[in-house]
Image (tube, rainbow, N blue to C red; front, side, top):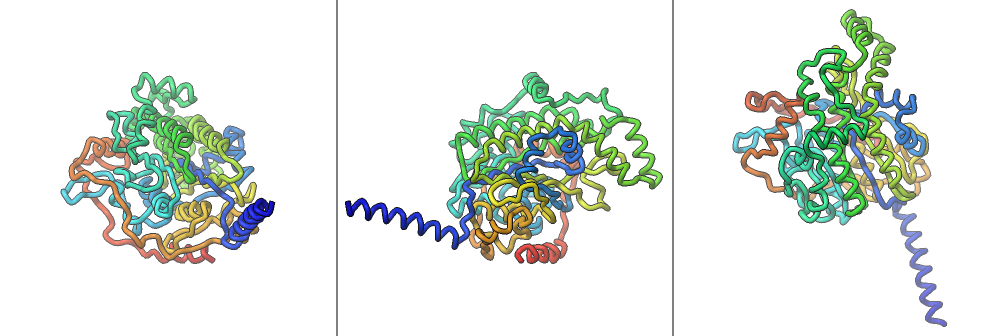
Length: 472
């Protein structure tokens, strides 16, 4: 009997001791973080659909969690922005400053993982023994060999148009599970688009004539197939390769916004252009055409809403769900874009739900640099002081932050990051990525374009000032 009493006493003391340790060390009550990126999701287009009851899952997410606008920056190039999201650092620190760069061999190629100078949140977690899974992130090819977790690189989606490519996934053991999830071939793609409610846009149905964006329209079924394939791979890995930190990325909203404004009602479009040309365009006029463009985009935002619904149903009481976009879209000069050069980058959106998040609250002052620090904090890891963002404190209840105070380290860049093996020659996948960027109008014909990059970075004092304010 005394042995039984001793064992029970030891267990009670151990449990009590761990409870005390957890309170003292601020261990967050979160076992899993889910992070989803939606390229180009824009508050001025999403909010009218929410008001109309078109996005029930996102509406529910706002009710159980926090929502706000997130500040982007220029240049509004997805590869740059999403690298800042993943690292919490400016482009001058992480080293991705354009769509392409020139290798030592003199070849212009898309950015690759090896060109990034600093660590992503999943690399930091791997070094700290926390498994993660990352899918479809910009410039992750060739996949860096992480010790804890897996990476499905941004070139996995190219398998919609190229043969199976095992090198797009790390480790190799993950590839067999995702290689057959690719949606391929127009005869197979179009029925799935119809089932998902995504229009098979036709140029003859447009209200205004197409210009350069016609290339995007003609390739639209392929862009849908890419996101659909990534969604299937995400579902498979979420179930079969569970990890504490899971992140995936979609870009169909962004791609659609590059051409779908041609389907805005012609009378309203012409009136908006006239008012703009006469210098009489008001915010009320912009709100009106935003609402019309949101109507056109409804099927694509509903595709996003279904993805959100799926991950909300996968949450439990110890899961943090974070969603954000990298920028929004705004009307300017007769089109919708990331904004003219003279204007600020249009805001994106950010959502959070989970332990400690204040229900129905508004997130203020968020920037793209805040996402990586917030992910680290959520899974119980310190934030690096050399990151240009900080914790999204406004999303959390004050009592939660008191129980789980933020911890800091000076930097995570004390060791060299591991990189994937890069080819010394331009590959077929390089060519396909360049064609993709040309189709979307992001770069000129690769055979003619010079590699123009800024010579020196601007002052980073504003970013550092912002970090210090957040640290306080």
